[in-house]
Image (cartoon, rainbow, N blue to C red; front, side, top):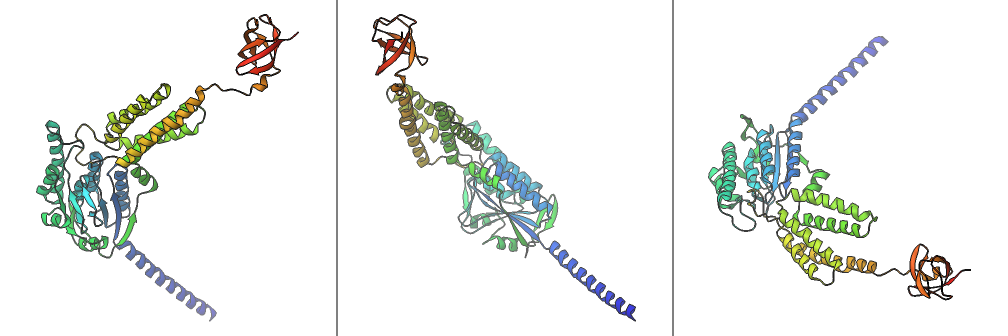
Length: 442
C-alpha cells in the first residue's frame, strides 16, 4: 500500500515537471521567434570609426538573427572611401537595413545621400532634409577636367545605388551635379525615400510587411511589435570619432608642438615631452581622417618656428611674421587646393578657435618662453660668500691683477700681497662683484 502511494506521488511530480518544461520551452521559443530590431545612430562626419561601428552593428545583428536594423542618420557628409564601404556593407547585409534621417532638424548631407539611398528602406522624420552632394571646392568653384571626373564618378555611384534600391535616379543625380537639397515631404514625393515617420516605432510600424530584396531574394519585413535593442558606439569608437573634429585637430597640433618646444628649452622635464608626443599622435590621426591641406600644416609649423627664432634676436619682426603664417595656415588647414571628395562636407576651424590659439601661442613665446630665455642669458651669480676662504691656484701671474682657478672655475682676481707667481697657491679673502681678492698662502 505504501508503494502505491509513493508511485502516485512520483507520477504527480513527474507530470508537473513535464508541464513546467513544456510551458517553459514554449515561452522561450516564442521569445526566440519574436522579431528583434537593432537601432544604431550615425551622427557627425562619416569617418573610419563610423564605418567600423556600422560593420560591428551589422555583424551582431546577423549573429543574433535580427529582423531588421534601423540606422538613424544625421550627418553633414564624410570621407568617400568610408561612404563606399558603408554602402557595400549595406548591399552585402543579410539583415534588412532601414535608414531613418532623424530627429527633426537633422540632415543627410553629402555622404548622407549615398547612405540613405543604400538602405533597403529609407525614411525621414518631419523637419529634416537631404541633399547637397555636389563636389564643391572649399576654396571656391573649381572647373575643368578634375571637376568633370569627380562629378561623373559621384553621379555614377548614386545612379547605381538608386537603381539597386528602386529610388529616384533623376533626383539622386541632381543632388550630385547641382547640389540640390530637399525637405522630407519633397523627398517622399520624388521617390527618394519610402515614407515619413515620426519616430523609430513609427518606422517599424510602417516597415512591417514591406518586401525588400536581400541578396536577390524577396524578404518580407517583420517589425511590428518587435523588441528594440539600442546599439551605441563603444568608448574607443566615440573617442576617435570625436577626435576627428577640425577644431580639436588644430588644438592638438598646437599644444603638441608647443609642448615639445618647452621640453627642448627645459630638458629632462619629461612631462612636456609626453604631452607633446601624445597630442601630436592624436593630431595626426585627426588630420589623416580629414581633408587636410598639408601645405597649411607646414605653414603653421613654420609660423611657430619663426616665433621660436625671434627669441634669439632683438625685435619682434619674426614674431609678427610667425603670427601671420599661423593665421593663414589655420584658416586654410582644411581647404585643400585640389577638389574635395563629393561626399565630404565643408570642414573648417572656427574663427574663434583660430583667434584664441593665435593669441595663446604668441603670448606663450613672447612672455613665458621669452622670460625663460632672458633669465638664462643673465649670468647666474651664486652666493659669492661661499668663495671666501676657498683656496685656488694662480693661472697667471698676479701683479696685482690676473686669473685664478677656484672651485674648478677661472676668475678675475687681485692679489693683496702681490706679486703672486703663476702656479702658486692663493686663498680668497674677499669678493667684489665678479672679481676675487686673494692672497698668497705661505
